Length: 171
Image 1 (cartoon, rainbow, N blue to C red):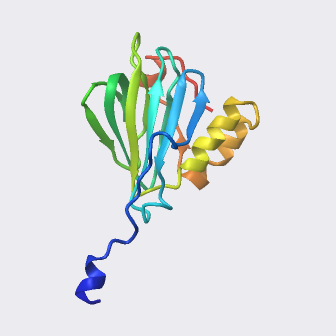
Image 2 (image 1 turned 180 degrees about the horizontal axis):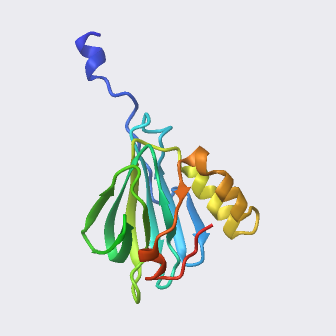
């Protein structure tokens, strides 16, 4: 490999303008805006924002086997299950959850939350979010989500710490 090849990025820079970004209502009180997926980042990352109204269910307990999922809270407060502990993140807080660790997230009681969510390496998640939107619209079923677990590396689990803190919305 010559120096020029070694310095070349494996993919082109990726820009998503807010005016043209795709947004998906994946559940009542929850809006996901798609920013970058693995196909546009050379597999490096997947990134989206999530905006949760007060009382939104958020994401049920799950884990990934191939990627670290990270969260950066830009507004409000977010409860996040990490293993068997629930952490409350506030504006400016960052959390990275490695593969294999159970986690879940939702706005903290009495709060809204706005979060930058990402995966590294990228996971090809945009079609998963679109599936959630179709379920919310009544065009697909919870069984479709369960069946997609191996495709999107989203494996559902249970947690007494999370179910004891909030009502479960697990598929």
